[in-house]
Image 1 (cartoon, rainbow, N blue to C red):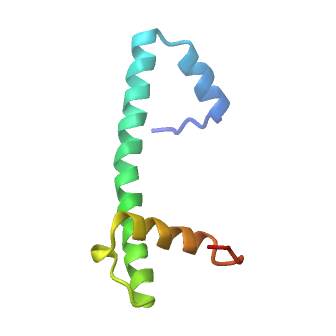
Image 2 (cartoon, one colour):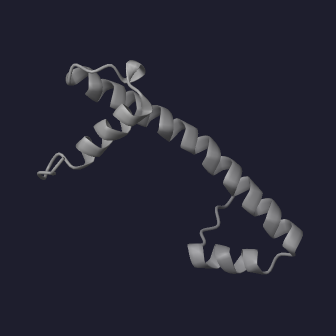
Length: 84
């Protein structure tokens, strides 16, 4: 079976030609896939945060939400000095 190669712009133009209910179906499918992928990304991020906590002698699971936010803020800004 031959493969058709199209650009992103061509795909968008094709979708624009569809009736509204088909556009909705496509949007719903894309959103559903994105939500599933987000769960995988979140699980990976949490795993990495747990690892970083362990390396720093902290326990992610016993931290409060505020402590977690502070930890992440410190990670994000660790390359510059911040006043607290």
